[in-house]
Image (cartoon, rainbow, N blue to C red; front, side, top):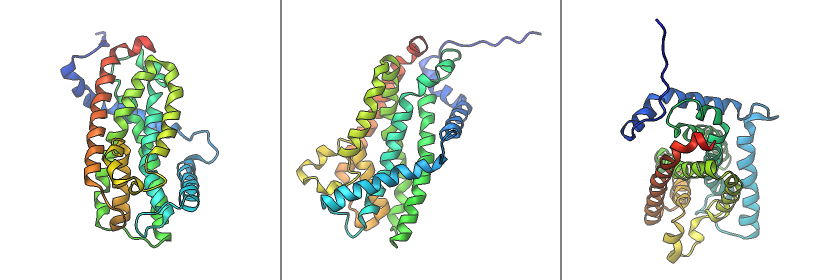
Length: 274
């Protein structure tokens, strides 16, 4: 008896989310492949995940801490405060940058077989999370160096990691869809990431923003994420602005909905455009 394989061109909307679960093995394969080849032909390998945030911390400490004389959070050392902000930002920027070109780099797979295309950009978050864990080990070493112990707030850190993922994957899906349709959009993304690094409270605390502007400032979803990370890591040394956190959470959820909606709206044309 001859076995016949049927490749389905699409699925009904009601089955799409079920397909995400059915194709979970493909998600793990793509995530592991991206993780394995990320530093395959580099000289120092995974050490790049340490060098980049560490050098950023040094530069920001010199510019904002030594030259601009901006205050730290309470009595927390300024380098520790900066590195606690770099962690979520690096996770966000890596996810956004890697997701934007993920469909283009997997064009041969996209054009040949059916599977929920959302798996591809989402799998890039695994690589960003691996970098996050490596950098987090450096943070632990810095806390030991400064003899700084976190409080009970550290137990809330997984929740803010989840919030960082939500804040990253929404814009990531949106720019991924745009990059397929408009290839020159890939030149805009590095500029947006660089701009976001300086307008987000990475090298400084959001407390330097005047109180009357903090809710408006919190429209940047990474403000709530970074403030939350610092609150978890620095404990009582870093205050948590609950209204601002609520605004950032609402904006992150909106972009998640908007990103999924935009991605799903253009997903059927990906094979033709690529």
